[in-house]
Amino acid sequence: DAKRLGENGVVVYTGDTAQPQSERLALKNGLREALTQGQFFLEYQPQFDLAEQRVMGVEALLRWQHPVYGRVAPSSFIALAEETGMIVPIGDWVLRTACRQHRAWREAGLPEIELAVNLSARQLKEPGLAGRVLAILVETGMSAHCLDLEITEGMLIDDLAANCALMNGLRGAGVLVSIDDFGTGYSSLNYLSELPVDILKMDALFVRRLGDGQAGRSFAIAELIVGMAHRLGLRVIAEAVELPEQLADLAAMGCDAAQGYLFARPLPPGEIAAMLARQADPAPQPEPSFD
Ligand code: C2E
Ligand code: MG
Ligand code: MG
Ligand code: MG
Image (tube, rainbow, N blue to C red; front, side):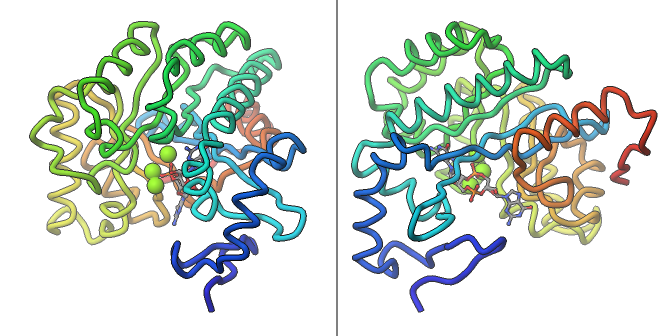
């Protein structure tokens, strides 16, 4: 079967070619309406500072509640949105919605956290991205130093000079830049020292292999990434941490932060607010401990 039911009953597809042509077309044609009819919404996955054992940020993740197909996974529609160019207005909507939400958390008196937003390749190619990002920051009253834009190595390297200039422009305004899925792209070591970024997000690929203790080869590789990043002045956030053993390894190698199902799934804004409130005033409930 071309599709299977993923976690939480989300429809996921095994691959582009396996996606039935009719559904693919329906989804593709439905993107504009999804945006105008309010079928998109965001969930936020907490990022935990390992040293301080607290939520230091969230990653905004786009969700589509389709009237016919139900919840459609980003892996099934982001590529379609890129093909059609709809990712540009959708990406603006994501950024504006996430920044507004961040502002709302602040106005509710919750502690300031970082907000990571994923960008797609097509958004980088569209002229005026930096201007639109800065305009959205002004419009939503969000402070630039809390915004973290996630891009992949491949996206940066695709047009290195132009994208470095773009990222440096944004960083000049105080915005943070992350390399998402770090380690899955091209040979990163060559130009890592020159990339205009602040954070490396260690891909799930490396995290999945951890948990066998500090003597293992997987530990050595992940530790190398963390050590190299630190030498270059970058922070490291580990992705898709699911097991306590993985967390123990990451903590032992000095990884700065982690996100994954072990801590929390992507959550609606209200649950993030509750989490931040508990963290700010932990007295009534015991703090979750991750060691
Ligand atoms: P990503 O940016 O690497 O996001 C991390 C993905 O890992 C998310 O999948 C998240 O739900 C999932 N994840 C988190 N913790 C765990 C874990 O412990 N185990 C496992 N197995 N997975 C975990 P999601 O939400 O399905 O998003 C998939 C991808 O779609 C994202 O990967 C990102 O590349 C893209 N995406 C999502 N939202 C947006 C968006 O607003 N704009 C753009 N351009 N891309 C987006
Ligand atoms: Mg990401
Ligand atoms: Mg990632
Ligand atoms: Mg990914």
